[in-house]
Amino acid sequence: MNKYLVIGGVRSGKSRHAETLANQFAQEQKANVIYVATAEAFDDEMTKRIAHHKDARPDHWQTRESGPKLTNTLAKIDNKAVILIDCLTVWLNNCLYYEEIDWQSEKTLFLEWLQHTQHTVIMVTNEVGFSITPDNPLARQFADEQGWLNQAVAAISNNVMFTIAGIPYELKKD
Amino acid sequence: MNKYLVIGGVRSGKSRHAETLANQFAQEQKANVIYVATAEAFDDEMTKRIAHHKDARPDHWQTRESGPKLTNTLAKIDNKAVILIDCLTVWLNNCLYYEEIDWQSEKTLFLEWLQHTQHTVIMVTNEVGFSITPDNPLARQFADEQGWLNQAVAAISNNVMFTIAGIPYELKKD
Amino acid sequence: MNKYLVIGGVRSGKSRHAETLANQFAQEQKANVIYVATAEAFDDEMTKRIAHHKDARPDHWQTRESGPKLTNTLAKIDNKAVILIDCLTVWLNNCLYYEEIDWQSEKTLFLEWLQHTQHTVIMVTNEVGFSITPDNPLARQFADEQGWLNQAVAAISNNVMFTIAGIPYELKKD
Image (cartoon, rainbow over all chains, first blue to last red):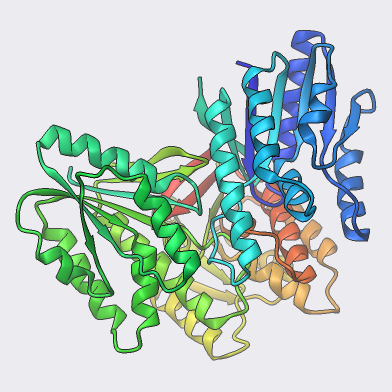
């Protein structure tokens, strides 16, 4: 059991639950937590959102900022670590946003890494598909890709949790 | 136990789970699967979405395309069958889209059919109400009608499942 | 065990489930139900939505209409009662809508009241964060505040239920 997926909505406590898991596993394994941050600060609002999350994390965690090429960032982690990726939704957004990135290739690389990694990996992602179909074709594409990514990652994960109102609920356990 | 409702978001694996159930019940009952397709191809995107789902279905299934008058289509099925209706959300959309259709009447007809049918019925539907209230009054009406329809169908169903990230979760079991 | 939170989407049966609980507790405790209505009828659609909910409630319940200063309304209830607050989402909306209201102060007052009250309290709220991030900054702010409020209220509540298609699902039980 080394792959954990935490799925939730906006401000549902998903990052906090993932951080709790990361601390617990790091203590059990006497390993470091490496926090892989996918968020880029495009504007003031995003800067504030990133700072809000950062303030909540322990100082001794290592942080790796990652652009769209997430698997490159992950492949450089060689010492045994508890890796917390927060979050797959922002990574997807980064990939779809940059025209030069081929999302399907990046996704395949990541899923292969995830399948074979020996690190303990905790991933945070959003569920975005429980609403009226958006008018905007890009939003529909995003919802499709997010849903497919969540399915693929959940299939590889040993443990999948759903957070609502700060309460984690177990959907899958190996 | 012959009525199953699978509720999920966009790309949550709800159709795939419904198809798995249909295959399983068809084998158990030595019956055919009749796939009732509610989607109409208004545009290229919809054509692709329909083709994507169709490719995933077994060749030996019978398909019935249905417009808004879903209960007419269902009433014509006389041999014992496993009926998979995919999906109620597109049916609702078709009914609200065509001005000449009276949604409340169509809904009543369908619920009466569902209450009394001896076929095994598997239905797929979307949950669309977990977002900020849409600005658009038609979108709010759609969310209301979808919610009411899901409640009515769930009340008649023996088994209700919720899919997230490809994982079916049982909400109700007789 | 005296604090219950019912979380759901649009037309998911959350009010009806909360009303069922209120009736049950009122009978057990030989107490009255005081229904605290947060909805204000800004327009015709809202008037209809309020009437729709009102028709479903027993005549002998007392109703208190509350504007943004919800805790003021609650503090005036002195006889032991089963209090049903429907709903926190409309209350949040009222608070963010009125410029002269300081939401953070109102929220703090409410959470303090909730922490210490001896009444049985049943609260209804929406989950609004399972969709594509809205373009509108106010909608994003709303989703943030709703998510934080739900987390804070759920942490104080003894029992948290999630409703989908009219089916209540227990997320937390003391």
